[in-house]
Image 1: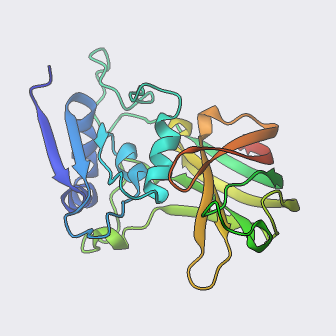
Image 2: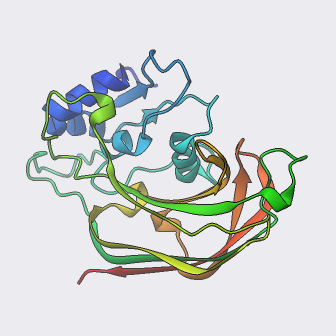
Image 3: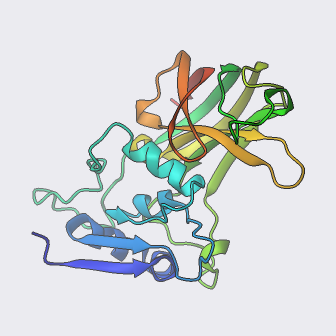
Length: 259
């Protein structure tokens, strides 16, 4: 049983990560840490869990009441598992490794090109089952979620947690119509993405409904990069409550690593 675990709010963990990233990472190679959402999140929203996974935090707690991007990424991390996944190489303590944390190396990749082509979808779930499918105006938001080197300090030590922004790569398709739309083979590209740890990087696919005011997520899928199968694939999407649906996306995925 673990006899040493720190439990920190997101703001406290962010502050330590900004000031002492090497000490935080070193601690989390040998001991347990838990982070949890700040108590002022009255709307039960979530932070980006990838930030803390990349810092070696083992237990990244989220508000399960809200199916936002944080929960989408969490599902992408643990999908198909029993709730536990092994940390990547370099993140685990190895008593045979005599290197200091300053000398240690975290294996990562530079992706010269990541291209995602959205071809079509079928049986997308409506926001409400009584909605008129003819009034459903879907488009797909695609995000590549990765983080800077876990040993690198943040630049602005005075930044708040909300101001500490992940390295974001995102794009979206044009709008289509109906629950089985044709997206015309639109391609979203991400170029020269550095410092990628595939086990801690994700592609998110969020099917949005174009409505007056803020657009609403109707369905989604999230794939960890080390699990992504290249070429033409069907992606099963979940509904906005995280429940299985009959919806699928037909996509083509291409990744070219830098030499």
